[in-house]
Length: 133
Image 1 (spheres, rainbow, N blue to C red):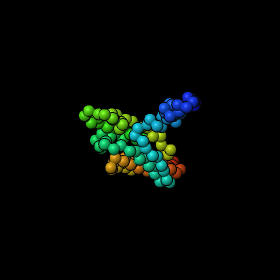
Image 2: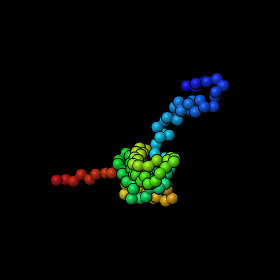
Image 3: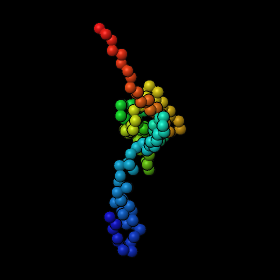
Image 4: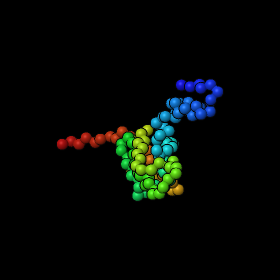
């Protein structure tokens, strides 16, 4: 939807931008922002969470999801502008393949959380020996 206000243009361009679906999309509101990638052996989740320490994070792996929960503590003070989000957050990442839960690694360095989720090896058919009783 575009609203045309004739020659007044500039102040009303902001209104037009606010009405664009991409501006209001869930993706633009998701926090923390993350990248999800994979190769043949692992799935990689990288989340930007500056100002959050390891003690303020909780990672939970279920059969089909990785849940990243945490809290960015509010810095006390008198603010004139506050653009960095503060408070609790949670992101759920749907996993595209089974994961070897015993070998998952997570590293937090310089505000970047990297979680490496090794893919589980597919189980091959196994012959079962039938015993005579």
